[in-house]
View 1: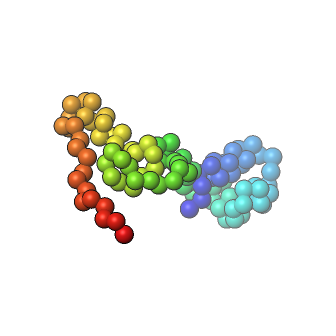
View 2: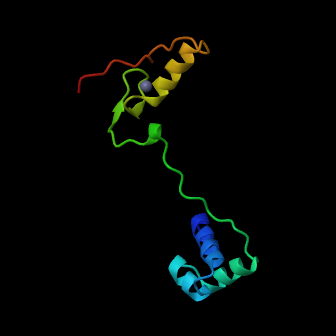
Length: 107
Ligand SMILES: [Zn+2]
């Protein structure tokens, strides 16, 4: 599906009326048929939204480490621990206890 911004740009250029449909198709990188369909109203102004920005909490180049709080493999600070701490602060969950792990045997 075409990106919405592309469809909107085609519509805008058509509304300006300075360029031929052929020229608009070339500029926008779409087919002349698409431009013609938008111009005639056969094609509604819809399209694929831009790729959503990755949320800051999930965007990280940090290495994945063993979390000392919950034992999960995670980038630090551990999002799971942050969420659990938040829920504990709100009184929704009892304080977390660290998982019991078997003692590490010497190799
Ligand atoms: Zn954790």
